[in-house]
Length: 91
Image 1 (tube, rainbow, N blue to C red):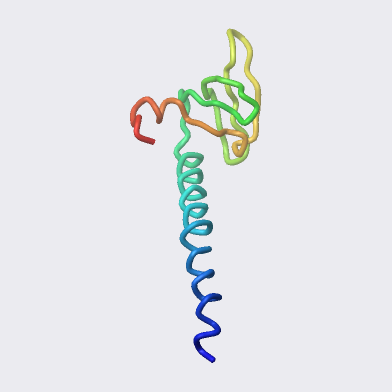
Image 2 (cartoon, rainbow, N blue to C red; image 1 turned 120 degrees about the vertical axis):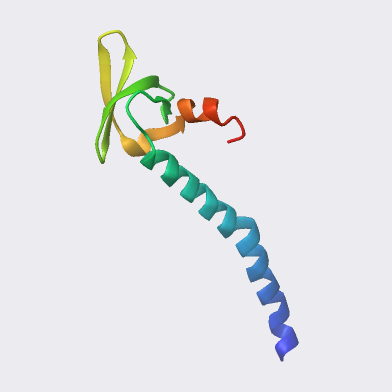
């Protein structure tokens, strides 16, 4: 009877190591990146807009995309912190 549960347990272990764990690590990395944003950082948004952070609060980030052009975006729309990537190229 116990041998019949072996493949199910094995599939559960495979699911954990191939799907759940890597996704959890990526979510943690993204949360750390979003919480470490600061004024002056160069970022890229989900829509592909490049800019520098001029102001930010809990939910809204204001970025400068050109001279005298600033836009407000949701903090969750930030996908890459270029300032962090330049300092730590392994990330």
